[in-house]
Length: 214
Length: 185
Image 1 (cartoon, chains in turn yellow, brown):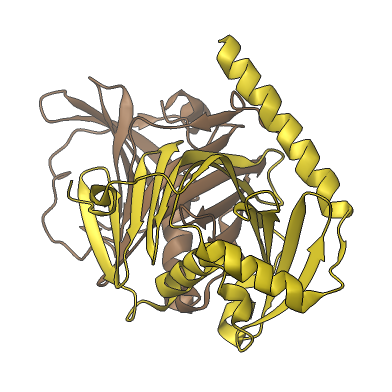
Image 2 (cartoon, rainbow over the protein chains, first blue to last red):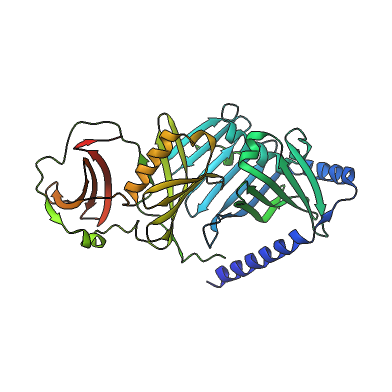
């Protein structure tokens, strides 16, 4: 019980910090240097293991919908999102396919034939690998920073993407250059934010984690 | 901000399947003795979904034609006969956001490939059925399958809306909409 309270308190504190930070960001003066820094350091990340807290804000609800789970990333493009709350749900991205395990049902999608999934895949892997902000055809990027974090604001350029998303904010911790939080705001101003906590970089992750059948 | 007690997460009895039924001719409700049920007693029907004041979250799978969409269905009663119904993917991306006002469905947001009149009117029918929002002239109650099930049928002109409850589980297990007595859509 104490543990739960402690986790909740630290979560609220973390939220407080993030909220304060969003206001205290200033535009990056030397964009080229920031880009090179981000690029070099994200290249050094081969694996990420983390927990995540996802908050969905809908204008007609007074409380946000919270989902939680575990997240694994392995270079070049392997992702595992394992939702544990409020429902169990597993989604694995590999270089070519997306697998979803919902209860005992496994379904797979080809990223090339499924546009929506391929966009999600691009955003997720692109963010973590740090190449999304090079995609000047698809996004207009603005760079902000404060003492602790970089904040990248991506605004989609493509019409199809624009109708779904207004902006993507990516918060990157300067200490280890890993993504601390992603906030996706929809055209209606409803948003989803995903905060990564207890991040462990470059630990060994068994490749079975990206095999949904295991 | 987070108050998990006020969000009623329905982990049991999910997934909630909204299946667009095909035409069928068999009639399992033939030869069933029905007794009249007073509309005033409608609140006695043990079906909490339309009545709950809480935010309901269901894990949902919607199948139509060859496609399947799954995600979280969020239902919030905003007023006596008004609801907001939204579906988001597990990642949070909104698929649709509807306002249901006394049986009329208003599209607040809907992703392009679902925003077709025929689909929206099907959603309207399905959510009216699910949330017991159809207008009716008379309600009857009946027993089925050797008393295992108790049911209610709402009659409105040629349409019949069936709600079937398993006595064992004390929850509504099946909802159907039939024109005269054949299943519709």
